[in-house]
Amino acid sequence: MKTVIVTIPSAPLSQGFLRTDFLQHLTKGGDTRVVLLVPPFKHAYYAKEFVGRSEIVVESAPYDRYKRFEGIAHQFLRQSIPSTTIYNRQMHAFYSKSGLVRWLWFVSTRILWLLGHMRIWREFLRLLYTLTPYAAYLPIIDQHKPDLIFATTLFDRMDLGLMKAARKRGVRIVGMPKSWDSITSKCFTPIKPDYMLVQNQITRAESITYSDMREDRLSIVGIPQFDFYFNSSLIMPRDEWLHTINVPHEERYILFTGGGLDLFPDECDVLAMLHERMMRDDSFKHVKLVYRPHPNYGWCVDVAKDSQKIVIAESHKKVHDTSGGWEFEPEDLKFLLNSIQHADVVLHMASTIGIEVALLDRPMIGIASDGKKQKPFYLSSERYYHTNHFSPMTQSGGMKIARTVDEIMAGLRAYRENSSLDKAGRERVVREEVVYTDGKSARRIAEKLREILSV
Image 1 (cartoon, rainbow, N blue to C red):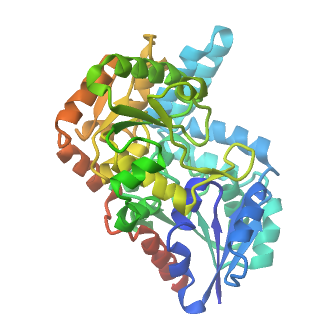
Image 2 (tube, rainbow, N blue to C red):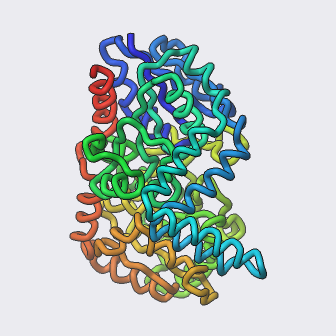
């Protein structure tokens, strides 16, 4: 019997590895036991879900044991990622701060960014990081005696603590970046795994450039979080779906997916201005504005609650009253899929939602507007569209980028007249970002782990 420890630090990871057939394929044949390492505040939730499954064990991680230290280390290490995204963030911090602090931060972080271009510096930081504390994770390794560790983010403190303990005990490590933006924005990879699974050719190239991985230790597997998009049985009849979200069957809707006030502080201004324009335009008289707030950040409650034009559509479940205490359950994923599928146009704020919209071939507009304000570039929403991970999206031709509310309205009119506009660009997004369109990425990952286990 082989044992694999799989880290599940957040909802996007449970979506990819617990809401798919990943565990089914990893444990097939009865020769593999899986230990799910989860944050303490979600232990009861997951344990209840897998009760009676002898091949699956749910284990709490000492998640907060080194929280402060790892937070500082993470801030320091990611400044040494020599990417455009980090440069962008450093400039944002420079314009956001004032006085002497502004210059101290700018100079220190820019030095780290410049040093990060040298592999010798990156390897020096990795050597230093191996000396940092991790003892609280050793009992997990000693108790379960795993044959393999699967670290699903490569930057979360749970992953890193477990990886350090695994290195100490000589356990092999397979890692995977959490998302398409991880390697260039937050994943310095202070501990390189023995093997890395990546989503696509773009993240493969980034893993070589920024994480210093060997080419023969990389495998492209796709995006397991998106497997459910290829399940046509989840698509509801339009009238049934409209009834679900309280939209009259004779009306249509625009889907506004929020980015969260932490990242997009002007989201409410944009939503309010868009609402006002649609109310004044007779061509949008029978068009609702369906607002999907970001599940992890603050949202525009006041703008949305008093309007008959705006419909609030939340597609997640709160399981614990803390940041990150939400989950996507199967019904939530079905809700999300249908909200995109039946929309005339989807508005998003430089979000992963853009890939999901392309998968369903719906027209989309990227909001790069700051509402009533005109901000400097590095303080604006537009800066998010000039990052390493999002630049291929903007260059694909699969979406319109709107820098003002007027441009949003113009884009809505164009797409309502011809929904096939930019179709070739959306197909390019799917081809470059998703790669596999068979809905079997989770299975592919499980089979790759079993292959590594057998070596």
